[in-house]
Length: 185
Image 1 (cartoon, one colour):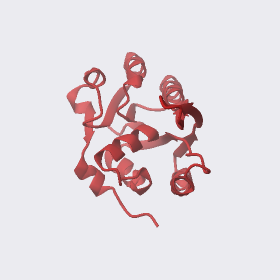
Image 2 (image 1 turned 90 degrees about the vertical axis):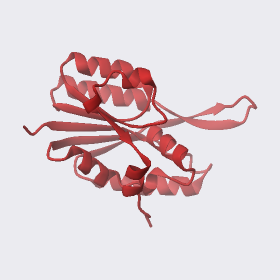
Image 3 (image 1 turned 135 degrees about the vertical axis):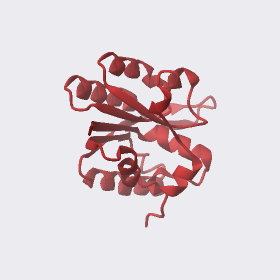
Image 4 (image 1 turned 90 degrees about the horizontal axis):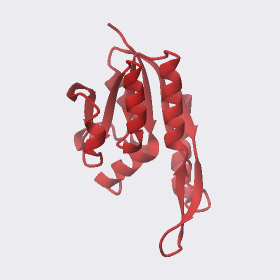
């Protein structure tokens, strides 16, 4: 039976985990479109939501330019929506400023719950290793929707993984990263 599938990608988490594998790996060089097609298989793709936010252009214009290429590319794909979230200035313990992405997790959770309650999908795919999504996963399961998680193996908590049956857990390994990595010009 063909299932209707919605995919929710925690872009900031994806970048952080990818960069943990190799500090020279950037999400802007990952072929998200081909990867999503491979994990969907023969099911029917309803929508892919990608959540992230621009680095401040004045802080790092090169990263901003790479992100701009990625975000615009993803937004042009059929059934893809890039949800841009804000960056908030914070200070570290040495009072040095940095920018933290805000509202990405809550936007993902609201979109996923709305889609589930509106019966837009049979199966939800979450691409994240963030344990903040535990309440979302519990709620999606309560309304009898299938949910799969795709995660980076060294960046996920057991508490989050334990919410999933073995057949609904998929590791994003180094070989997968290499398979879907390309040089974007």
